[in-house]
Length: 349
Image (cartoon, rainbow, N blue to C red; front, side, top):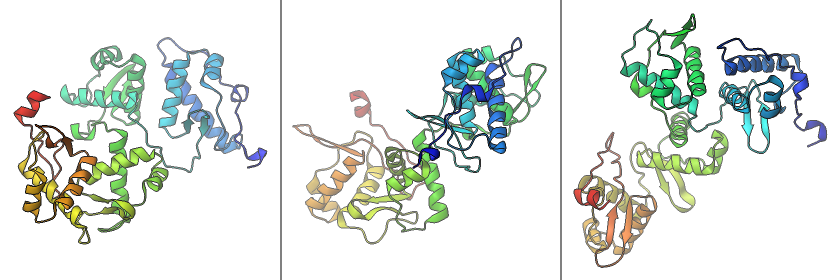
């Protein structure tokens, strides 16, 4: 890459952030965020900046504008959530391509959590259209969030047209959501949902899933996140992971026919555990399981080792040792699973 192709560092002086004066009670994060978004849009259109150009540091902008670094950090987070910039550790915050609609998958932020808690409050307190929301101070005390985070969340709800501001009071405008719609998800769960959509759009039953490295690059997350997301989908019965060179395959219509004996025993063991065991239950000896499934003890041992590696079982040595259930697999023929707890396991735990 030539020197002229390197990302350019935007200076504070060329941004001319004339937002030094704030009215009494005026939200600094909102005002600065609106200015920064407008500046980015206009500067890209005029050609003054281009994608990958780096914004000045939060500290430099905060000093010039006359606000705290914490305020500036909230501004950067909001503008990044809106898709205008992206932050990279040890690099800085750079301008995103306006034509790139892909959003990097991220952990649930404090603002997103606050949005969820406020929506939950609206449902639980039976708010109706036109009702006034309680003050941000009361919401902060109710949710345990900071006032700044609550204000950002309220502004997000205004942009979603769930709330609207009338004479400095926030009023409920729309309640078109349910408790199930607002449950926050972890990054792994979000990634699992995106992989599901990818499978529905691009793959069919029996197809091989791209490698974890390919998916990590496509979804802009780590390989570890993809690995954990795939494990969730395996537990849900949508995927089946074959060790070695076979990879992970889509099994939405059931297990594939060309499985090795130990892979078939794995599936039979999962069904056996889900039907007959509780969390903490001790499985029968390997010799007995070999008789139940009519296979060799070596095949059963390999299947048990794989289930232990996937977190369903644990092995214990000694007089009272054996193979114990640590997770109840979801039966591929069921829409959900019951998690059964034995009283002995609970007391020991």
